[in-house]
Length: 367
Image 1 (cartoon, one colour):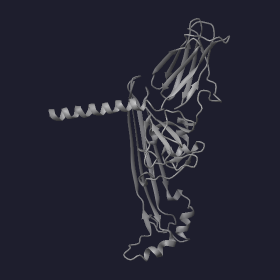
Image 2: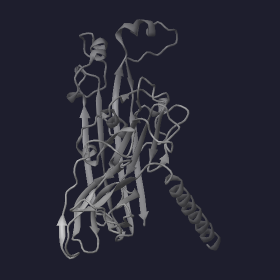
Image 3: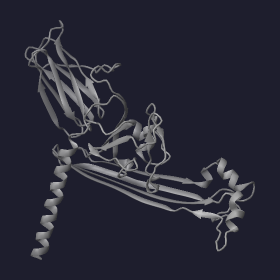
Image 4: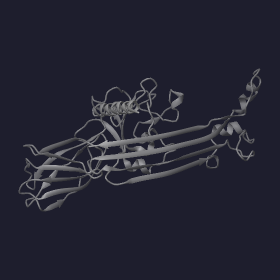
């Protein structure tokens, strides 16, 4: 028993050490957001030594900074999410911005104007929509949490949602084991030139491109697609970059559940299906032998749950997705005589293609 306990403790320490190493490695990649700006008074004069405080509305994490002699400030490495911001300075009323959304890889410019008064007085301000990016020269598209939640997807993989970015297009995979993962390309490429980062960690297959590991779509919070002129810290890519941020637990207990179904009764015959059928009933093993569509059934179900272990300090998040697909691909009618003529060949009119997959995400954050 003592030997088993000692082995368990050693294994636990090794796993924790690897997790810490991964956290420090991931910090070098772009999985965060930043804000920058200036604080001035109603006369347009800069306000030095003003305290800028931003609070993560989900986890309660607070970051503060003091403006310099030019009234400027910059806060980096902020976790993407929704924030509130306050600015306080002596002899001025407090400025409050109640709702600010920060997306992965972006730098939001927030300028505050303080009015004379007491700190006990609060003035609510709104964030102006930034029409022109003035702090960066790269071209990117941010896929927000609202888009991930509401936009329809044929298959639940975030690579399929990347194609809404300009210049992005879906491409096939060079590895037949990754046909369900999804892949994208830019500027006429074949998909092997795209670098993928998840929570700052490298997730690119350097041999055949695409993702090294697939992730539960229910666990994806948002992601950024970079097309041109990215910074030197990205590197390792000539086609494009995808930065993904996964969900984390918050101070509130939250969960989700979903179920999707697709069957042959919901599918229209495409060009190739019509070529296989040739006006005759398709070969299939569907319950109804006279049905003129290849048999197909796909179920997707799962959910997620996240919340606090210690409020404002330690959080957990779990997501589970299960996929079950059954379909039959009918052999093209024009090649049936040639296949049947091969000596010793046992010809079958349809090729069953079953597919099962389970994706699990388990995450613990400690601040």
